Amino acid sequence: MRKLFIVSMLILFYSSVFHDFAYSKRNEIQLHFLDVGQADAILLETSTGKTMLIDAGDQHHEQQMMEYLLKLGITKIDVLLATHPHHDHIGGMDKIIETFYVDKFYMTSISYHTKHYENLLTALKSEQIPVKRIERGMSISLEHYLDIKVLGPFKKEYEDLNNQSVIIKIKHGKNRFLLMGDAGIEAEEDLIKHKGELKTDVLKVGHHGADTATSDAFLEKIKPDYAVISVGRKNRYDFPDKSVLKRLKDHNIAVYRTDQLGTIIVGSNGKSLSFITKISQHHDNEVNEKRKNNF
Image (tube, rainbow, N blue to C red; front, top):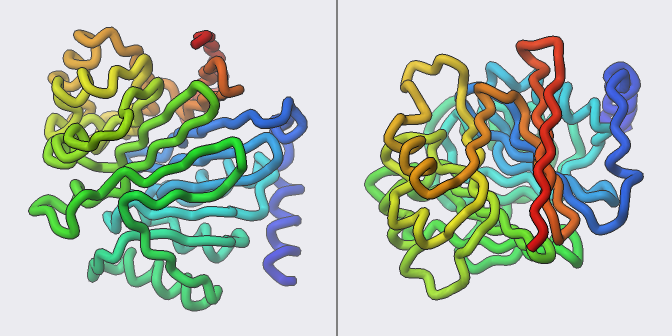
């Protein structure tokens, strides 16, 4: 009851931003690639108000992430998923669990002894949220018109923990989204061997555009039209790597970067896609760009 009151008050406080997606046409979705610096957080929102949050950024951007969700009028996260236990993916997850109702929580069986991981486990225990262990081949239920499949990780252990990231494919009508977490080339090679259909329309680029991911062979296999890179402004790693940007350009893939465009919202009605970019954290203006593709 106390959590409901607090969330309701916060929504009233942050409701200065008008959000009408929940009242739009039925069976539509939006994927919000949140501007959380050198980190990852992806919100899948349906027009009926169902939500799935994949990763939750780091602790340095947790406040602006929560404000963004509250501005959308969100009180409940139907599915919360941690792709892997690095701090730039789970650092803000304990605050999400403490602030919002979380119906289902998914993560892999990887144990990772860090403060951020322990904070996550403590929050889950405090809110009495059971952990559902995610495995390749699983389907995640959110809406009857969405097909959400777990394509990876393929192995229980990789030398590089990033390759154990959960890989998600979302099918909405004719539109397909492939979310790579921090998975690199070794995980991509395992995915290429996968016999299922990998053609995608929107690729969330693995590991923030590092040169250890997004190989030519992988791009040739999945043939995306668009690529989204979640990356921090002037980050110390100099991501996205120039070689990755060149590969994307060589494959004629349109690139959207959170360091340049802020939060990126991809809308889907099952037939066409629209792109809206919101430069809000560091700029006063809002940039809207829509591109339609009929499949």
